[in-house]
Image (tube, rainbow, N blue to C red; front, side, top):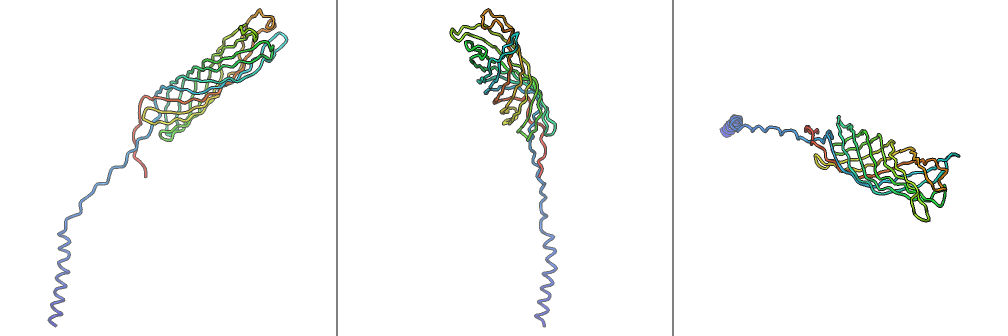
Length: 253
């Protein structure tokens, strides 16, 4: 009996001492939650200037206009290199990017072909300068931008007619023509200010007339020539944008 009483008393003592021991333990230190991760968002807004280079092809047809009507002289393609620069401004609203740009390129697009009007003659058509004045509409994924562009285009051209046997030029004419352009491009910002991209543009240049007077009897009936032209361009572009990343935002989980 005494053993049972001693055992019961011991168990009660242990039970009563447990809360006191727990109260004597040190409080758990408070740990402040880490701040949210801040991720910078690429901002395409700002002025930029850059350089471009690549390949171009011009398709043109030459017709001779006489008192009796228009006589075809032949069509041909001429391709070569293009190189130049661009300057523009973009502004971004959410993922939409709007822009205005002026681009000027030196070109070397030259083609010579025998004239269908008179096989003893040949014509050389050359485009040596191209300009684009366009608006842009794009969609941005942070530092990646896909856009379309459209507006006005201008080319500087020179047509030369020469004798096949002697190679002597009989007449030449220069013209600057205006037309329209549409294009599409992709650009990637690899630093806050520098970006690289590739762009395709198609130019519709319509018709242009050159009037001239020639003493050669083979061209005596010719009043002027009419040239139609389309141009395709593929260029690689590098741009430097003044500014940098926009305001950072908290990353979402």
